[in-house]
Amino acid sequence: MAKDKTQYTCTECGGTSPKWLGKCPSCNAWNTLTEGAVESGGPVKNRYAGMAALVPSAEVATLSDIEASEVPRTPTGQEELDRVLGGGMVQGGVVLIGGDPGIGKSTLLLQAMDGLQRCGWNTLYVTGEESGAQVALRSRRLGLDKSQVQVLAETQLEKVLATVDKLQPAVVVMDSIQTVYSDQLTSAPGSVAQVRECAAHLTRMAKATGTAVVLVGHVTKEGALAGPRVLEHMVDTVLYFEGDTHSTYRLVRAIKNRFGAVNEIGVFAMTEKGLKGVSNPSAIFLSQHAEPVPGSCVLVTLEGTRPMLVEIQALVDSGGPSPRRLSVGLDRDRLAMLLAVLHRHAGVACMDQDVFVNAVGGVRISEPAADLAVMLSIQSSLRGKPLPAGFIAFGEVGLAGEVRPAPRGQERLKEAAKLGFSVAVIPKANAPKKPIEGLTVHAVERVDEAISLVRSLS
Image (cartoon, rainbow, N blue to C red; front, side):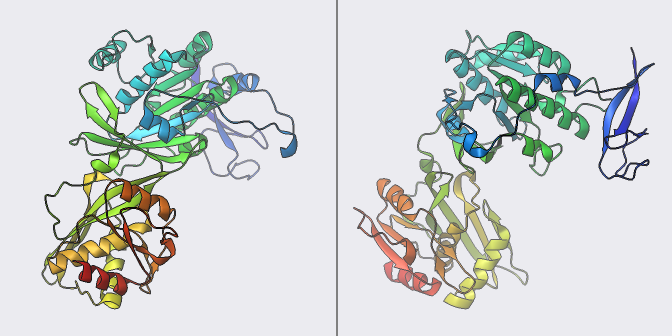
């Protein structure tokens, strides 16, 4: 039967409406209207009927009676991606990965699918934006000439689900979710309804069959994933591809992960043969200066479970009546707060100066443990005197001028000592109980104490 139009039915009273409303016109219940397709000569078709048979109803059980076991993970062959995923792909897991156009999402996933195929997983790569020939051409550029990854160029959800049911793959990549549409809805592909419903069907399929699903998502101009926010809620893992397309380095950050650590990052380098993991990311975030320069301070930050060294650079220059405050990779509002604390509690005034702060390498730092390094780099640039060679710092700074401890301070210090740094200024609460070989640790309680200490060392 030919599809005629869309109709909305109330789940409470069964009343219908030709358009979606917040309140049912029949029983006045809120948020009870669901969308369905009206077919000529028949009632509204329930698009969840097939899924109801696929996913059986579960019995109620207490937590003590439910058998809990460790979730097995399969490595993808990309160590940095496995780190972000929590050890590898999980059967029945749903991963959503988003990023700017051309940043390398399809390249990374094609490499990961080839790695899983070599591990014995039956893989299916569904492309809605490219033809099969284009995907094959990319695989040859990546050196995957003999790859056995199966490719399907299709955008209709029902055909994709039928193919999955026929082939029974262990993992499916949907590139991208914004190009897929369901024949049960009349809205265009990429609309809120289509994205939500297609993602919901794929998620139910993954949970019912144990097939891992990877959804590629578009991003908006602001950098957020396009589509409804519920898309991020229904999946197990949300990954963001970060980095400048003009740079060779890319970051994959876990925003949500039910099977691993949140805010874990993987660092990749874009090469002629695709994306390669960077085993020592601190090396790319540290500028190589022949001698110490003013305005540079090395921070030991924590990204997920990985301590990482990042160079913080500051430039303080004479400004006009309205001095500028600009930060790249750091929170601009927090920079304004730190300048006020620096003036009030350490006597370092920048009220008539332009202040520019940058995290080297394009990394974004959101943890407050960067406060002390930012303030010391600003003070160094203002005085025109560099910090000592081999100097690192970390610690949160409060509005009262106190230096608060940072989480997992011992791991940060050990990472700095391993990379050859010799002087550290840290919060007193993070002071190690035992000396760390090759590292002189100065523990401070207040900002003015840290500034005085750095002046005596430089």
